[in-house]
Length: 412
Image (tube, rainbow, N blue to C red; front, side, top):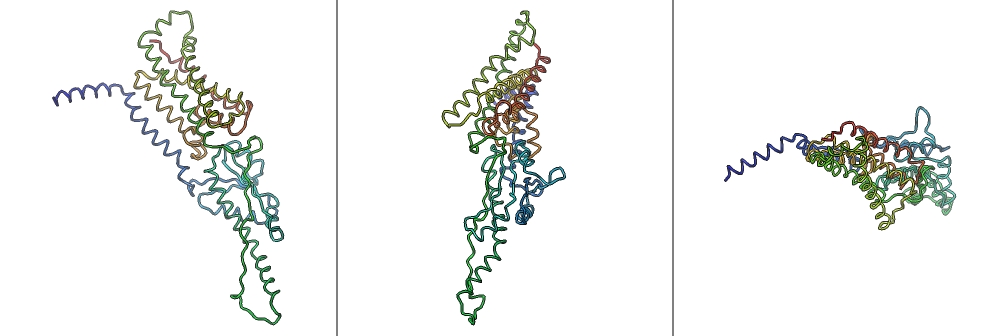
């Protein structure tokens, strides 16, 4: 009996490993997923270090010296790289806003011209407070911003209180002496001066002016578009396997008898899957709107990104179908591409926590442009003109995938 079991096992192993492509993707998919997810999640567990610091643009408009002291202490923190110079000149507020709105930096600090003066006003006005502006992309989560807020506020409070300490000491000493006879003697140990409670500095979180947003995002505005993009590209396997099955059954050979170009025949094959993708997107966002109250932004802009995304996904399905020769190869290749590209693009974890090179790689995937387009509509408040670049990029991916797929496609 053992001999028969081993014989059957050996037979099936030879069949499995005969499909080299299928077995390669079977092992490659989990390996790539482990590598990619480990790299892109570094920012979730690593607050930054000297080897890979978090870059923090800082605009110093302060006419006094206190902002410079705060900036110097920030720059001494391991894991933070303060940027006060840009292209050889002092960073301006407009440049800082552009860095954030263009996605080159997640946050930026602005010290106003009256920062030092506002701190000094605290001596005469107990309600006076100095303000530091924290410019943030609305798509950046609170979990990422909160440590930066705490660090900046803590250092600024310490610098402010240190600058006010001599005046507080002088005032306290004067008050003690005013209650003593002129010939009274006392030691410094007998004098107690209560320090003022710290609450001199406040942080004001703002978005770049072109981002028309009233509230900052919640988890739904990251997860809904992220997993929608992730799910849309799973149509690749279904579509490619359907094409393979029809090739094996000879359906495509019979279609060649029709007086139609091959590109038209393939386009007709794609249309049902394209419509399914659009329905899938509509359902995902519809559920998020009805159950979670998620605002959908400007409908025309959302529709434009959705149409281009669905086209890119179906185009990739044709391309995958031309590379896979068996169902195992198609299934493995489709899963490998979908999982890897989704992870790189920020569908599973926010892109701003990823290393810079991974954020750059996202621009080479349709997933990355789709995520950026949805974030522009849902979080950043952009309209149709604001998502033109993303729609064009997705349409370009769709065209390239389809044209290469038509060129490589064999109907038998």
